[in-house]
Image (cartoon, rainbow, N blue to C red):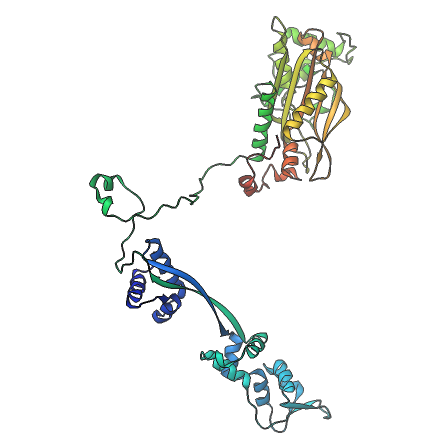
Amino acid sequence: MADTGVLEIILKRIEAVDGGVDSQDVATSLSVDHQVVVGAVKSLQSLGDIILAEQRSSKHWELTGEGQETAEKGSHEARVFGAIPEEGLAQSELMKLPSGKVGFSKAMSNKWIRVDKGHEAGPKVFRMVEKIDDSVQGKLVQIQKGIAADVDEKEKNELKKRKLLTEVTVKSYWITKGPSFSTIITKQEAELTPEMITSGSWKQRSFKPYNFEALGVALDCGHLHPLMKVRTQFRQIFLEMGFTEMPTNNFIESSFWNFDSLFQPQQHPARDQHDTFFLSDPAVSRDFPQDYLERVKKVHSEGGFGSQGYKYDWKIEEAQKNILRTHTTAVSARMLYKLAQQGKFTPVKYFSIDRVFRNETLDATHLAEFHQIEGVVADYGLTLGDLMGILHQFFTKLGITKLRFKPAFNPYTEPSMEIFSYHEGLKKWVEVGNSGVFRPEMLLPMGIPEGVSVIAWGLSLERPTMIKYGINNIRELVGHKVNLQMVYDSPICRLDS
């Protein structure tokens, strides 16, 4: 609140006059900054209808720093004239003076001086008149003394061009008595307390009016990262389409479930250390369904179920190696094996959204750790057309309609397709996922009945998020370069359902 003394002075001055007072005049008489009086006016307004304040604006001319110097020492041209002795002064010496360049030009225009170029030592400057009238200094002194009315607007604008004068707009308040005017300052209560109600003292108190338009203080709370927002939308889409979420809380997986159960050969490049993170402790797993393991070993090394296999010596030591899972399809393999162990087959639709790990080289679209979205549908008679249809339905719900499919090869799906979406930020088609129909060599060893087809797809969470939020570099979405303000300001969801 403003100084109580200033508040009382303002109230007494209003009481003493018939009309009102100007806040600028009050500040001048008290020798205080005008903003102090403005603060006092605001404080009085907050107390109710004690005063009425009308904002006014006025303009006046003020001397600049250079203008004040000119009013004191004379104009540049007058100072140049005064520096020239009767015998004249070399022009080169004149130009060295502080007012030399500006003053020489103006003095020449006023025909106060002349230049004689016939001297051997160079041009010399002489006076042309005996005395001068420094009207510039005189006008500035008049304005400084508050008699600017004697200077016409054309002359003022000329002085303004020379940066000797500036026009200042002053905003002030015209203060008059309000409907509840009083010279006694009574602080208004900000809240109604239980004690006031109990004692009845609230009847004699004055309360501040409630501002129902106030937004209030912003809550200090957490913010969802764009990845989390898009993940929530993905999950909602899957649930709307009748899918059941798979448990994916095992980041560490054995090579058996991650590769072998998916009919991926043990010499496949993806199983090398430059593509996969291997664990040193615990280095291996040994708890596998033995009958299923034997069927997987046989289909790899000898073939079976209509396949000739890979014809190599399958080793249990390779299958036992623990890794950071490279895809959530390992979880799908476990769930399909569990489904096959049921007495009677029932169609299922599964999905999962969780992290996977690959020994990738970091660039604008790749990280070593990222999220994979997996969808699996198992039923009799499913085809590649069903897969493409469900993918179109899925991405349309997500708000992405520009899709392309490209034939591809996967060890565990045949046929297989890569999924591409157009990135408006990068202005090119980027791969957002992979898909296909699981091979019989993968399903039949599990015990899945013949005639049952399983269509599946795996998508990145990061790339659709980048497309929807217009992010060109994945390092701006995940990692130490993330702009936290972007996280705070990003909409609840940018997806167009």
